[in-house]
Amino acid sequence: MPEHLGDVPLAKLAEALAARGPGPAAGSTAAVTTALAAGLAGKVARGSARTDPAALDLARELDGLRVTALTLADDDVAAYAGFLAARKAPGGAAAATEAIVQVPMDVLAAACRVAEIAAALAEHGPDALTGDAVTAALLAAAAAESASALVGANIADAGEVAEGLDGWGDPRVEDAEERAGEARRLAERAAF
Image 1 (cartoon, one colour):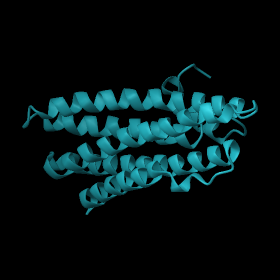
Image 2 (image 1 turned 120 degrees about the horizontal axis):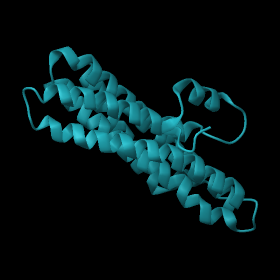
Image 3 (image 1 turned 180 degrees about the horizontal axis):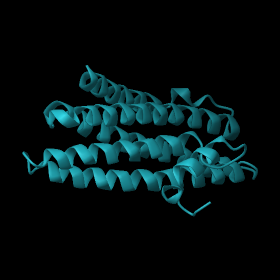
């Protein structure tokens, strides 16, 4: 498999996701979904630029979000592998916990921004590209919700391993849920 998930053909990526054992999983899938949503929204932004030159700025921002999301897909695989290795060492899980929480928080941030832009493009962009903008917003919202769920699950998992604590009371979980909920509301408004 290539060094970066963004370089993996889609069929091979789906195969890697289906494989047993460590490797790309839920976090990587949320990140790749964010990248796909950003790419689709970028198409809409470029189409909007014919009548709104400011849309090119959105297209460039979406290009950056797409690249960021693909990097986060790789970061997720590395963070979780690091966590699995660290939890075998006494006291090691605490050090690796931040990465398995921060990466989905970063995916969440990127997905929320893509959802926000895509929803605005669905409302103000060309009618011929509304379906693309709505699809991008829905994909980004789904990625945001997935990343939000992973924040809570990873905090809980790390807390149980490291300290025997239930991580669901962590304020980052509530923040992630609120942000994902807003992305979902934007996408739903764009779709209906």
